[in-house]
Image 1 (spheres, rainbow, N blue to C red):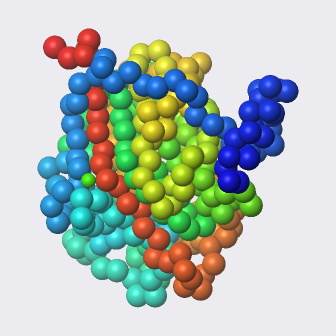
Image 2 (cartoon, rainbow, N blue to C red; image 1 turned 90 degrees about the vertical axis):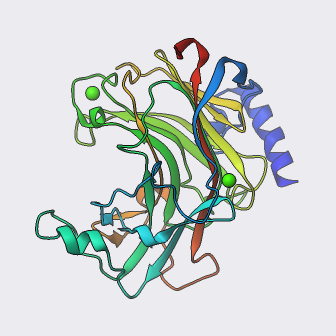
Length: 306
Ligand SMILES: [Ca+2]
Ligand SMILES: [Ca+2]
């Protein structure tokens, strides 16, 4: 009911001024443009069947321990009932890590401590693709102070040259907005980043989009179509926004990442980083939070498949 009223309000505001919903931070609705899947063929997928992560497809970024306001640890990742599940919760006892013990004298690891633990998986070194359509079907973790994401990267992302062609972080979706507004918890955002993460960083965003259902209870798909000219983003196959960055579109293969992250830095949770709000440090109804992924699929344009 509230969503129906919100849709009508947004439709009225758009007639007055197309920018008004974004200016009022209401979030926008996906368009009615449906993706034409007939131009693609499936190249790679994981349905997360079985009872463990398929290590031919995914691995953790095992050299990463501290991650923003928390820790990434492989024990927070599991496969169950056809889903990948990344858990997020506070742990009084630090988890142990085989890699840490094995490599701590050679690699500059941050030590695991009591704190907020969650996880990440990546296809880095196992699968990369340039151009096509990339889609995840998932249920978002219902908690403040953290977010989930489906994103893509390559080594060129940090190369500062005024161009995004060497590599661009493609955030297919990010869920920053749980309990962000009284009218709902249902917005996601997306964007791209290139030329590193320092003073030269270039950032583009399509803004916030809201979903018809409750994305913390129900599955939705989030996708990006990537060609040599632009990135086109989709929710449930309906176009949300397009980006054609001034520095161009990535022209190199990129790997996939699925992750949860806590707001903050140096393993310390801090308030209101990335708009996620402050974590309530007492165990509450939302902990542990779970990011549940039904599948990831990568398609390629038929024209580009030899
Ligand atoms: Ca660059
Ligand atoms: Ca599945």
